[in-house]
Image (tube, rainbow, N blue to C red):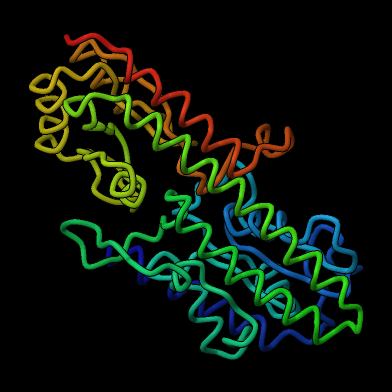
Length: 321
């Protein structure tokens, strides 16, 4: 973990040097964003999707995504073109916290100052720590109630930027109207998750993960507990045998029927645990990123989270083992 943080910090400094020494004109944000009056860059899919919802139908504002669909978010290192895009955009929206140390380096260097950045984690009222690690869990968006806080704060920032660049009050009004509409959808999502969770017997509310564990906020919000072979989402090659045994024992002792893995995972550890215990495997999507096929099909935070509801609804009808 320490070595990986050091390498990411070193890479960010190298990119900063390349950017500051670059003599060619900046090319701006990708995906045609340079044609817009206001260019927003999002580092991860949730940030991108929230902005996309808020600027839907708003002329002159564009958003681009740095983390390409299908890319493992926790091993992402920014390229020089990413640095150029960040330096030229009007607002950088990123996860924040320990997950985005490289972004903080860009902000501190003046490439993208605090006035042109928005950390998702700063909008929430409570931050949870990863057990056994001196790190905050950045996956605040797995609780839709946190997303409501995020999009309200983000709408204010976007409206302020739009108001400073355009005399058209309709642009700000549309952003705020989009926010109201999206919050209503998030509230409905929260109700539906809660209704599903309420149908699951208490003894089935332990979620076993043969993978990383990015659902800390989700579990706290909806009354679940969890055990996982990896406590957080740091890149790991192999889990400790004791951690795998702990998950296997939890499945057997609690009569669980499912071991979960997360999106874009090889799920080989979950498969091995399933073979050992005789339980099924299923994917819970933390929405940190999605596949290219899902992105091209128009999947959103809402659709991915509703897929999680479908997965969890199966726990309600499971007989005791």
